[in-house]
Length: 309
Image 1 (tube, rainbow, N blue to C red):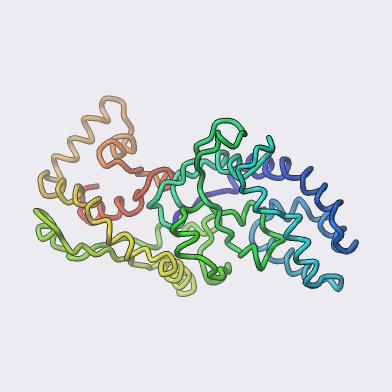
Image 2 (cartoon, rainbow, N blue to C red; image 1 turned 135 degrees about the vertical axis):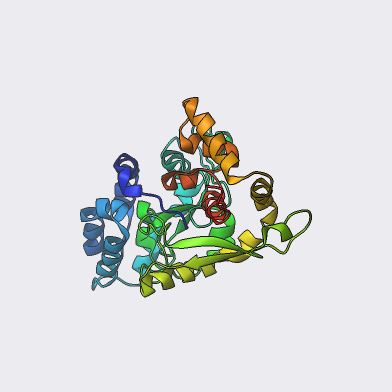
């Protein structure tokens, strides 16, 4: 549940539309879809590709409520906004999911912040496209084919979150968190059981991660709760107790005073606090950089519980 401020990257949004526009206009012209619907698509194409989620839903409703719209129209829209073509490794020399993923440079899944979502590619040829994040359609593309290529509907995520956990769960803005809209990083915190650090050291433990939610807004708390439950975050992070043991070892071996002095020493060498933090704990300190390294939110919260930072 990591926020990524897509609106701050207008250049990426603009390129997404600019690169797709010729292809989509050609597909619209070739389509046998009703003329009224064809005109709607042409007149609203930029909005369909670049608008924020609230406006996307309105566009979808306006389109499907058109008197010319029917089940046959739905199939034709799927062929126009062809996500399968966009997401393939086809050697077409054009713009595709790999290019978008490379531009976004989201390094970890925005839903779990547990798995890397690195994009590795060299050129546009099929053999040069190695890996990229999956794109979760926040609004199911089967139900909303018009939004299949909308940039605000393409959430960089890992396969487990996208395919195994969310699957076909119908997301809405009222019920679930949208990673490009909802900055809730300070409204939930990771904790752990047992609370006795010594019981965790020196062997296997039944360390259990719990997520405490408190935004002061009951509706928002419910959205955070539902999103947490869909992606099974407590259960999955509880399976990563080994990754957390190093933090408990540090707390057990070194005093708070020692750690403070250590940080001061490195800062005197010209390193910023967040740079020392990254070196010491292997994750990012700044919330704006949580998406760059796995477990950044989890470990920061646990470090605060342990009063290391």
